[in-house]
Image (tube, rainbow, N blue to C red):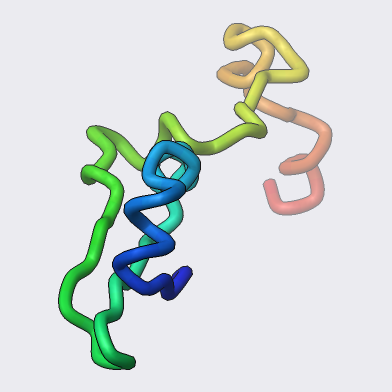
Amino acid sequence: MIAVNATKLRNNLFEYLVLVSKGESIAIKRNGKEIAMIVPPKSENWRDRIKNKMKLLVSPNEIMTPMDDVWEKYI
């Protein structure tokens, strides 16, 4: 979270809006007291923010086939 006074926010508003659009929250202060917050909107789905997407290393058919050699000693 970033804390700025109202004058600094007014002079650099668009720079702070870019930070908010990237997920940063900004506390606005006047005379050393917090008077307001600028927060980013809630994202629709947290999974959309994940950069590393999972991918299968084998085909779906291969996943569903039984592994006979693993179970041989238990039969």
